Amino acid sequence: MMKTKASRFVLMLWLLAWAVAAPGSLGISWAGPSLVIVGDSLGEGVQSGDANLRTQPYSYGMWVARQARLNLTLPYIVSGPLGVVGDTSVRHRLFPYTKSSNLAVSGADSWSVLHDRALATSPQAITSETELVLFPRTGSQIEIVEALQPETVLCWIGNNDVLSAVHAYDQLNATRLAALMTLPQDFEANYRELVSRLSQSARHVVLADLPDVTDIAFLLDNEDLERFLGPGQYLDEGSRTTVAALFMILLGFANPSIFQNSDYVLDAAETAIVQERTEALNAVIHKVAQEFGFPVVKISKKFREYAQNPPVYAGTPIARRYLGGLFSLDGVHPSNIGHALAANEFLSTLQSRYGRNVPQLSESTLNDIAARDPFVDVDGDGRVRGRPLAGMLETIALLLGISGDVEDSCASRTAQQVSDEDRQRALSLLEALRNPSRRGAAVWSQNEIRRVILNLFHP
Image (tube, rainbow, N blue to C red; front, top):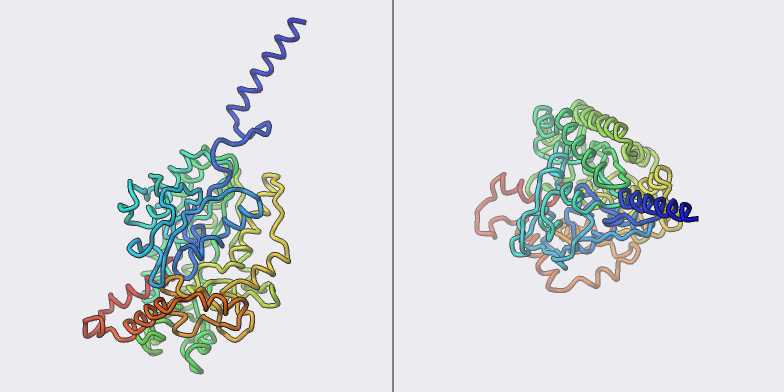
């Protein structure tokens, strides 16, 4: 009898030790947060060139958290009609001392997710988007993950390792494109270190590959331009320009003759350069993931399917083209429904690979999201509702008539929330953009114009 009791006691001690050594086993909860997001602007929740209270709740990570019933704390950011992501002069944290479990930072790439560290020790000392998101924590995204030891990490990183090429809207030449993208060997070194460190810090890790950045709404063909500029032969077949170049024309900084300048046009050969680099980086992602035994969400395949066969929700095709519903006003960051569709791919992987009971967002839920999405043109008139004054791009798009469609779903209520003071500030901004001399200078330099446009379409 004593021997049996002693054996049971030893067995209990052994099981307890095993449970402590392997958090999450035997139903015991993991020591850290249930869900952490690592990544770039897609994870941070940027839409229409800004991350703020009105955009952050609609990121793919938040859709995953809601559906999987996991807690995900956000670094809620207060912005305004002139806000752009990356600017900390007019944007601040609503609750600065709340420790977020969404660590994704706009602009992050495979190097900065390892090395770009938050150092601020007070809200007043915040000077970068990294610090705005990560404060009051210090360190890089991966260093914070190592400190937190979370149960599940969703990591979607690498988009900015290629996106910078097409984002340089006035430098679309082969030499410049190659220089702006991360070399495959450098990307592999960064990505391997990242995944290795994640493997030692989290129980479940889900990675994602990169969509084809030459097939996003930021790039426009001749048919797209005719919708905004009227009939004309602006581009040759197979060539495209950028939404940034279009806005230069709409704001009076340039005229359609800029499309005769090859630096503003991405031709078929240059498109191939970016696609080849993207494919090379995706090959690295899949190779490294396989080595460490982590699943990869094939966003590249899914977005290609959406581009070729737009899904229909709320009776509207969710298309890749600009104002087509899949992307927000910057043409780079997904709309609410775009994020929800991406979230479904992560949810499917959590269920199939890790056995999590997390069904995908249902058809009826997706229909409801699309019907309420400010970037889905429900009435098909070529304009969207947008989020009036939720950032500089939203402000300008409203005043240019690209957004602010009060006949789209829920639009009238949103429009009424815009104060007279905000409207006046927005009008003053547009006037300054259209008439640079009113800012005290006879003309703006090309660098000043470029800075304004790049701010509008920050990656």
